[in-house]
Image 1 (cartoon, helix red, strand yellow):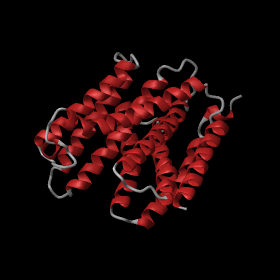
Image 2: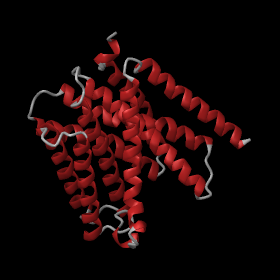
Image 3: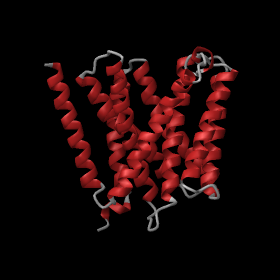
Image 4: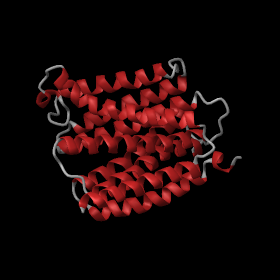
Length: 280
């Protein structure tokens, strides 16, 4: 009977996401949506590969994997890996000479270094430090792809970055959920309907809103230089994401529900500011 409800939940989630894409983003060319979903899968693979690479190289991850051991070698390995990934993304999009993109990557890297040093003060639990870094890394990756992608759009509106950021968040969450469920099944775990609901709907919503808010801040805030706006925007997106993650870790159901309601309202606000939705 459990499998029946799992299948029903999956059908509802797939239908809902398909409906949202067809109704809200129907004007986008399929080729662009396909590229964004491909990038979502690539980013999720890169996140999982960061853990797998230790096993592939025969290195004891208990000593060098930042989730298991927060020390200088693990921190350096973490930073080096994601710095290479950020520049690889930019190289793929052929934006290595774009000053705005390079500035954004610089802000992401500098913010990661600050978070590492702050987490290393010792007053934060190792698991909390990991989730802080993981949340910022995910937002940095999603927004970097969106920012690179918008530079390749020939006819773009002021809200194009916002549109691509929301779609990037959605594609990332779909790929993350699929890989997580596959991993659970291979490890002999059990997938429940509540798990599908929370990860398939609420987690996806948080991903869309957190990345979308980064783009909205850049779109709305005109005062201050681009460097300042990047810091503010990334901090806001990161804060939304990490609050949700930590609420789950510590079992704060009331906070998860409260943030989910706020995220639904925020998503409506974000889509209201997408000019492309009102264009024929």
